[in-house]
Image 1 (cartoon, rainbow, N blue to C red):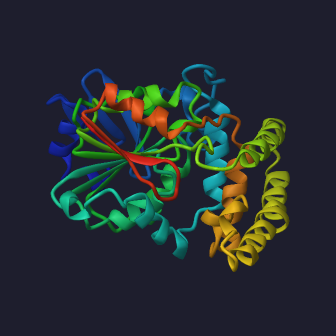
Image 2 (spheres, rainbow, N blue to C red; image 1 turned 180 degrees about the vertical axis):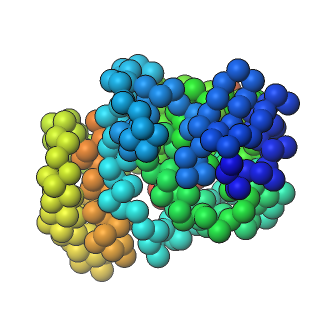
Length: 333
């Protein structure tokens, strides 16, 4: 029996919205469903959607999982590979955390159950640890096991491997939910997915890739070229190729643009150089991880600020931060 969850039965009942819940030696029985627990991670997915790592650990032969409109196996693979390669929480991540949470009063989370949806390696939850009552971390890739490692010392953290589009959780299972850099990689419209999240929490924080709507036209032209390259490269699964390309892209594309931006910034023109604003001061390792994410993820949606503001049809209040990263915003039900 997972020792981590012995004292969390009441919390699990509230998350799943049922009193019919029993913690067993090898998993969690919730009504008529059984969810295995592996390394303190509760597995919510059907076995056909287990990653090769999980299937092997459970001694299962993994069947070809479904893909397409509801589930993208290649995205699961890419993020699992990305976070196994870039599994460190870096010093600059703390600064990024502060940027993402500039619209959130952290003191207001003290007594809250907070959900990190699409948590990756738990880099943002790591900086929330100890600042809220409970942390619920969810990811559908093997990254959840890295998150478990990073937050092993937080006794109030719960870990779930599952698809955010098919969570067996109750309405309002948490008080605050954040989903950063995830929904734009889904095979379904990201703004509709934001609307769907309103059932889970009264307050949410979301980051979606911006459509460069506050940038000069040549930024969007360059994005078009990058997108064409990404569509081709994302089909290549060779780990060696992906690692070499990510390192070279960081060193010979991203870094030179950052250096050019720094030079032009002496005369106030740094922001006219693509990538400079966000990547100035970032380590090569941090940039390399974003190169991997940018070029090897097949699905990438982008939205304008105006489109985000249209979410007011589902939320009483939507506040878009004017600061980087663009666009991150809060929405209150």
